[in-house]
Image 1: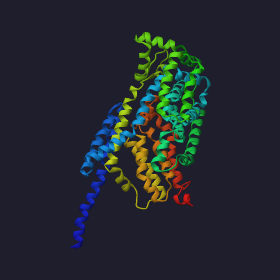
Image 2: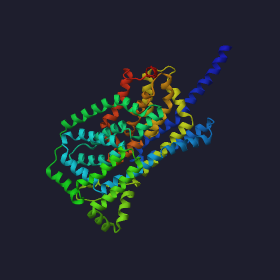
Image 3: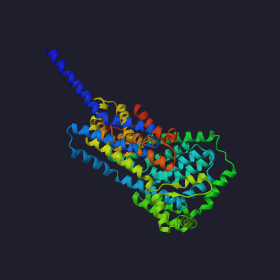
Image 4: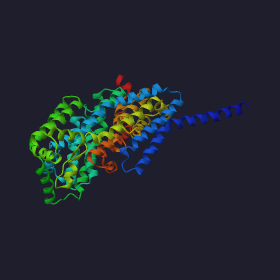
Length: 490
């Protein structure tokens, strides 16, 4: 009788547990299915389909949370705080859209391409591109700014000398993300230790243990690819046609590089990014008036508008400067601030989903489900890595892939005597760098837009981004440089 009673009560309990776990993961499962379907159903799912998928998944999560007795006030407050945390990145996104157009019409980007063609050896183009982007990103603290400025120029050079655009983008993104990770000016590099409770300088030092081997291997791969490339020969007439088209349209004096130098100094002096980039836009427009008078007058005649309207429209709506060379035309066509609107919509949609998932208690339940009661160090790190990648795939935003796993695993690291620098390093190695590899993630969408290359085409060549999570797992598995709380106290 007692056995029958326990058996009867065990069955519904098991069913309830199964149903509870299913409901916990259902919004994420639904989102993944819809995002995957969108790839096959829509030519450009980033232009609206993925945003709608995120909002519908948010609604489903909301309904489940309500069923679990979570108040509407708490859920909406979580969404509000989530969106509020994204205001600064959204503003920077819009400013960068205007910055790219401003630096094109001013002649800065065309000058970078023009002189780059003169000095870069095609055989060493990929490794050189990676190193240049590493340096620029390290100084600016932004992989996004690097892609929007020097990255655009390098893509133009790579196309001219016949290098696969996907490989070129891979070298740019690899270098940009290395510099971004190692820069104390980077938002993500500051965000990771802040959510994990570690120190910024210690975080960068500890992160270099896995990051430097990853970038060294990456540079070696690009060096070998460059030496073995067979499609780098172009006729002098093709090179002349490209450079001549730029030279006929723009003034290309060396003084154009004064503005990028000023911007780099301002960022090095830790002047806020929004202020610095806004000055970059204004400076670009001033440079356009001073150095590109012929181009400005030509645009005024073509559109029958005054100079102020031409400059404002270039920043807001983008540039479309025509030359006799189609490759140059592609380089000089950008969509400005308005072109960033769909990425902004994606970020907001992702933050809504993340806010509902957090305030609805889904994330806490997921953590308990993923880890055993007494996990090993490797199990903690590998689960942490998987969770960061998981949120890059589902939440579509690198900030969520840093903040959410940071919150989820902070106590777990401390309970298992693991210093918080292990957590901050892990979420950087796996959360920051993999965001650009997920086609529907806001980072991938941005770089794809800026470099005019589909994510799937550059993904296999982002060697640094692919190696970073592998490196942190490798170090964890072999217990290399795993900092303990007790060791620090002693």
